[in-house]
Image 1 (cartoon, rainbow, N blue to C red):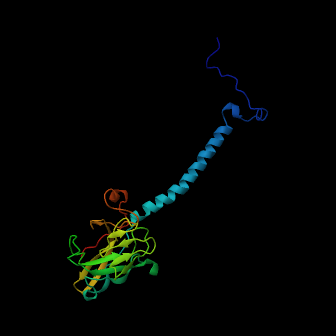
Image 2 (image 1 turned 90 degrees about the vertical axis):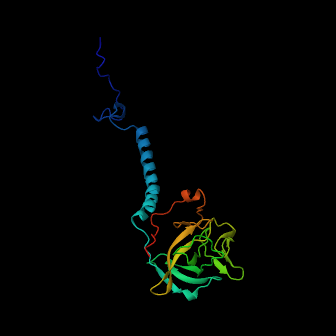
Image 3 (image 1 turned 30 degrees about the vertical axis):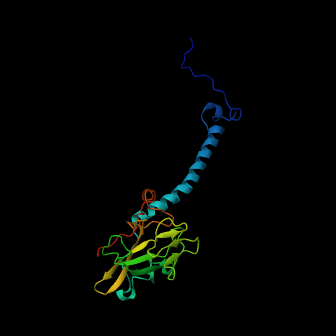
Length: 229
């Protein structure tokens, strides 16, 4: 009875049988199918890495650093009133010159209309000039007491609340304070607000933060931390 463990004759490849080298039919080299499969998988892996690695770098890069900031003086308290806005040029991103600057609209808090909780950081109301639709600059129209975005028709009332158009939330704001030593009003970091004017870490335009939106668009790790007074 033949031994079951006896090796069977293995068919030789006609391309290697007379060259004393292993052939594909002997199981010692990669078949064309396996070779093509491995090639496709390798190409897929390279393509995936080309998309994934930059995205990971973009997402994880800010974790190690936060955007630095300093309180920025914008003028004496007498420069500001309750019934209109004064524009001030401020630095949003330091170290990049004019490209890092933006406009802020500033006024004194008016207790008759500013009914959100009052604290040391909102005795002066400072609104961002970025529309919360796609980030275009808004302009304040004193005659209508409205902020209007020329790009897509976004309209905000005197407090920066959305009254028309596509913006998804009120205008962003800045922390403010009165420096007792200098007598100057100062601006701090930017923050976002929902329709109840509750504060949130800054979000990008087109990111709603009412309801489930605050979880769908979480804060960024690079957000500036409010300094101690």
